[in-house]
Image 1 (spheres, rainbow, N blue to C red):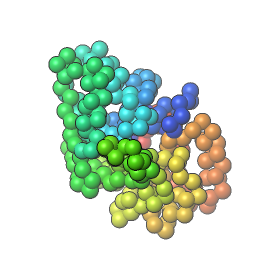
Image 2: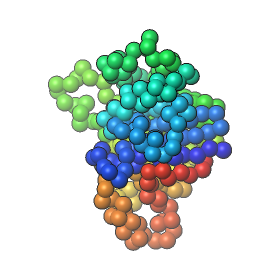
Image 3: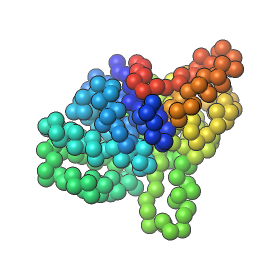
Amino acid sequence: MGNIKFIGTGSGKTSLKRFHSSFLISTVDYNLLVDAGDGVSKALLAQNVDYNSINGILFSHLHPDHYTGLAALIVQMKMQNRKVKLDIYVHKNLSNTLESFLINSYLFPEGMGFEITYHQFDDDKNFAVGKNIQIRSRQNSHLKNASNLPGYKDKSFSCSSFLFNINGNMIHYTGDIGCADDLLLFKEFDSNYLITEVTHIQFSELLELIGKEISPGKIILTHLSDGDNMLFEEKIKTLSMELSEKFIIAFDGMTFDI
C-alpha cells in the first residue's frame, strides 16, 4: 500500500493560499518527492513531512516553480544532520544544469554530510524507484517555444510528463504542458489517475478528450491560481453526474491511497 500527498497545488504565480506544484509518493520502502519548486521546504513543513524521510526527488523540468527550492531543501536536510543518501532523478539533458545549480549555491559534496546520487533518465525507458514505483517519461511541448529561441541553441531543454506504475496503479502526471495534445502522451495506457495542470490549457480542451481519446478513472486538477478553485467548481457542476464524479480539485495537503 501507499499514498500520494499533494505538497503544493499552486501555479507559477506565488500565492498565500497554495504552494507551488509538488507531491509526495509514499510506498512501504520509498518516499519520492515529485518537483521541488521555490518554497518547498516551508510547504513540506506545513504538511508535517520530515525532510529526512524523503528518499528521492524527481524533476519534471527546470522552471523555478518546479526546481529552485532544491538548494534550500538540501540545506534543511543538512541542518537536520541527514546521513542517508538522497537520490535525484533528472532527465539526462538536465543533470549537469542541476548539479551546477547546487555547486553555485555553495553546496559542495565534500561538506554535505550525506551523499547525493544523480540518476539520469531517458525518454520512453522504464526506470525503477524503490521496489514499488516504475516510471516512464515522455517529452511534452511546454518548452517548445523556448528551445526554438535562436540565442539559446546551446542550452539543454527538457520537459517531461510521467507515467507512474505504483503497486499496479497507473498514474499519468502531465506536469506543465504546452497544448492539449500533451494529454495524449500515454493514451495507450489505461490510467487510474490523470494528474494534470490547468494553467496552460483550457478546461474545454480537457473535456474534449475525456471519453474519446483518454478514459482515466479519476482526473485531479492541480497547478491552480488563486481564483481557479471556484471557477473549476462551477465548470464541474455543469457536467453530467457520471463525468463530474471523475474530477477532483487538488488542494495542499490532499492525500489519496494507491
